[in-house]
Image 1 (cartoon, helix red, strand yellow):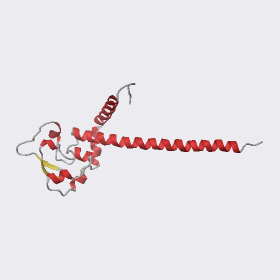
Image 2: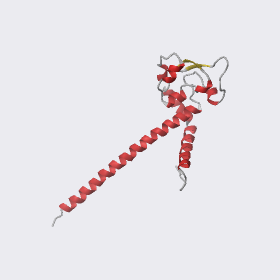
Image 3: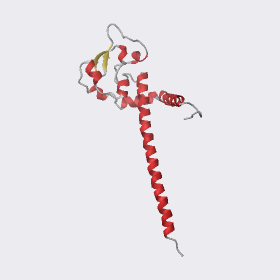
Length: 162
């Protein structure tokens, strides 16, 4: 990442988001393939819910919500967890992600922008936890190193030969 000295925090966050989004965008076909092969929507198929209200109340992670369900504002009719029907009157919203929804298990909403956004959000969250873990590890290593240096220095003072 490259930061401009004196740039405000919003600019830095925008640069990070843009970089991550570009990397995900360039690699989306292989990332999508990984999500499909990883069967991220498989758990939703086990849902025994038969009505939309109960289904929407079920706990899902952001990737399941973004990739395995059509956008809520499109007006699809709920049939089961991963099968939704276009109403006879047509979609409420007929743009972008609404047009991309497909009931095929290897398609669903994997090409939707909301799926990509959910993936980026999950990636950022994981990176944050990994970063915190690495900082903790560095602090522990520095602490152990300082104890070792103090012990060596103390040992050198005590074992002086005439």
